[in-house]
Image (tube, rainbow, N blue to C red; front, side, top):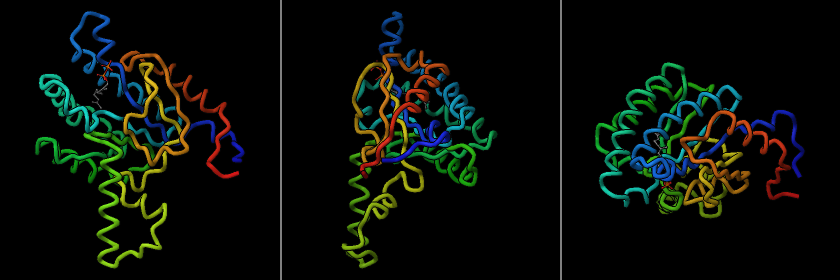
Length: 239
Ligand code: FPP
């Protein structure tokens, strides 16, 4: 059993499934895309507050590999939102010396967005106070398949012995390499699923579900989630 210390009460890494934008909008008689716009605005609020509370890493599930199957118009609006977010909000994060990185299949995005993602990662790589990881076109199974292929290639090229494959080797082959495992996963909107998000990385994370829709999830709600986390007795599979 792991004994918690005072410091453990603040999760080092929070991963968030930002769900409920569509329902938030529909219930207000607005188009679903308005929910995404409001959701995008809320990202800034929650990131700022997480940083203030001493959280070091926040990973946001912004677009899953399955989300490409949504109606074309909705995908288009999301692309425009991401493009704007990359240009404006991410520039502010850069100014504030936040390390920003991306996980997921960025090859599926238009070239200008891919270039911007690469540029941001390059320019913010040395910042270490606060890290934001944006999961875009991300799916945990796809990420694990890519990792398995990398490890298999290394084994074939005799760069890695099969007997030497361990947790660290797998971690290093995933797109989340170098990022500590999430301590807390938050999913908004009442759904209680992981939806192919960071499956390997959250093996021992605490899960927190709230009925609040993402656009309404505010600083106080984040505090409540952090408090709930602080009351848990964490176990990591070892007695
Ligand atoms: C889930 O709501 C949310 C998404 C598919 C996209 C998440 C995107 C944002 C919060 C906005 C942009 C983010 C950034 C980082 C700029 P849903 O549409 O599945 O809601 P529903 O379940 O109520 O239909």
